[in-house]
Length: 329
Image (cartoon, rainbow, N blue to C red):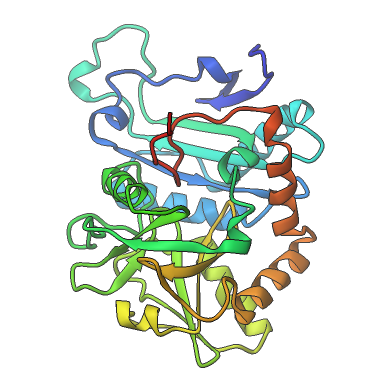
């Protein structure tokens, strides 16, 4: 058992987190040949787990990974993993599931002894606070979206609707954005035609004349949180549409925001340091966030800020999915 007590569902059995390892010959390591999903809970209850699994299985089908496990069984193992780990979670923790599926070892390495044959299915569970560390202030300041030279990979080259681990272009965009002057810089990618596409793990929205607008779903990962915005907007009687967005549209928008599973909604207050709207979080963005909190029974902003207040009791070093700026000193 690991010191932290967490376990991972690994190809049919629970193993300590530190022992959950794939082979150096796995196609995930060789080619980034792995699909995945990451979820979150609210008050320890999973949010849209089924929708995440449906997208996972669509990705598995698209990449022709020979997984024979029915989606119902995968869902059951997800809940078993949460149940196994919950006793070692803090009372105010939320469960962040990471579900990875790789094709397994390449055929030329089949003769290596002691390696799992066939696809690897891995379900890990760790505290959500790891992912959202330090984000509390962003609800007050907003994000500075930085358009990077690294563009989104179009669907005719690599289908972005398949959530896969071949993500070096996201990493390069994040590193470039971290070198931009100032703080709170998040990468925003253009598509090959120069329209706004997506962030590096988040979807992008603007609000103009009381209409919510998001890029068309061609060259982006169609996020679960993105889809939920359409649901919330309908309940609020606010039009929400898809269309091409130019950088000019962002700069002249009334407000803008990002969506993603761990943080739900974060306001975007500027583009390349050019202010958007009159305040960091616009009125419609706030309405969406308030309704989301109401629907799930959690003060989303308050929860993240509470975790941030406790950060002095634990350390965070090195780059994160949203921060690559070198440390000073």
